[in-house]
Length: 329
Image 1 (spheres, helix red, strand yellow):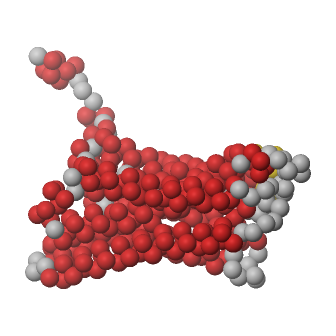
Image 2: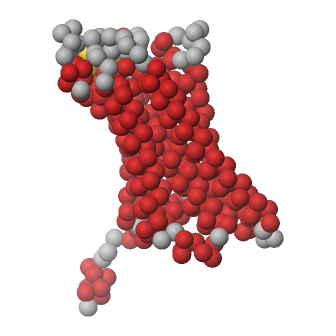
Image 3: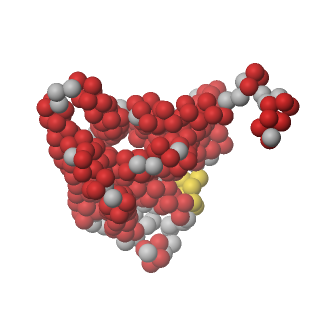
């Protein structure tokens, strides 16, 4: 890779595109972005903390779910803070190695979501369609295998994507997006043949989408058939409720991704609007996802309120000296 960066006109100190913001709006935009980031980190952190500390959540479903808030934290942390600093300081400088790292993490984040949602749908399929065999099928070893497969497949696909990009000789110094990604890094090259890069990029996009959608479509179709066959309405509703959060997150991901992709395909949309639409993947999803599976997943909701109740001490509940004496007696 060093040889591909040896062009004398290439420098590690790059310039990056900015979002056009009115000077009077800089501080409000920065404050809004900072609040979004803090909210996302807190919400995702709460979900992770609950899964780690609450024994009621030590189940296969939540071991797999653990990866979702984790990847949300990766996505929003890789994408938003650096942009907010650029907005506040009104600079547009980025160091090439950190740019590559940001791009890699953002692609890793975007690629992990389809695989994780597919893994979660398989878990729900086994739990609802084969409830008596669930514990024997979803053993700790198999759960680890599913999680490693989802992350490992994503990691390998993205590594190859960036390896193909790194072979191109660089001679430009301007990142055309407000965040670093593989296409903007590719545009730093002096030209050359991008055919392999383009074909591979389309391949992994299609592979991720088609494999994830196929697995989820099969799983949720089988779940729906099983629920229809249920004679008890309560059992049917309970089974469907365990899938609502995953399905909602899937549709949100597809809608946001489609809007972001189409914005770059419509010439009449301004570059500012295109960049904001692109940022939605790394800001909207990590912010809304924990709210969805926090509110719609009953076990997480119960665990959260139990923790609140345990740590909430009203003035009337403060221990007296006599009660402390009785407790110690």
